[in-house]
Length: 86
Image 1 (cartoon, rainbow, N blue to C red):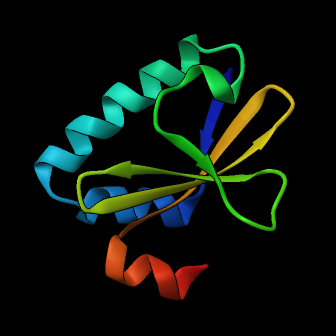
Image 2: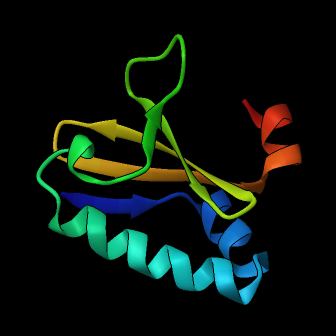
């Protein structure tokens, strides 16, 4: 799959702790190898949406949108802040 990132996600990723950034590198590689979203472990679809998903990285939540062959990373927030974003 092709992976893209929003400008807002890039800002969140830079501000995230080192362990979270390391986890992002691993997840990014997993999505590039995957043929569909279901191939990546730990992905959950957001209730009420068909193309929005989330993934947990320790206490952080990665929010992303998935279309045909593209994954677009949207947000990376602490779990307490993420409730306000969605």
